[in-house]
Length: 117
Image (cartoon, rainbow, N blue to C red; front, side):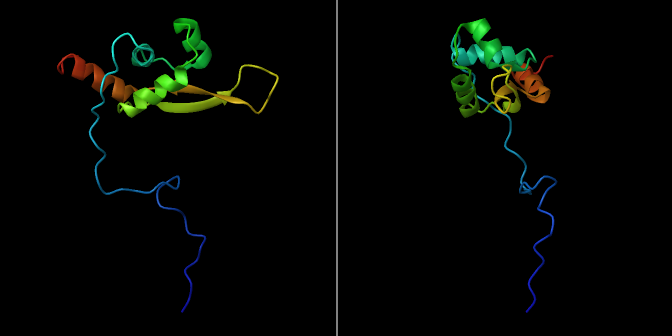
């Protein structure tokens, strides 16, 4: 019996597992008004990409990572981009830049306005 070659490309374009089921519908829960996750979501809903220094300067809080964690647990599909740290003391250090894709911003705004945009 011959073995299958182990150099076959992985499933999907970048190695992710493909699914035949549709993704779940976008239906996140809104964070409690006035909380840090609510403020972070407001920044993301403006279409901005936010990092820790930006969040800290606007909220006087260093808890951006915790706020993003809460938003993700509420169903918000926030994406992370790793960028070089703004300091020169450690060239391999990266920080996170967070953003909410535009299609989800549009869906959330439509849900807020009852479908009237």
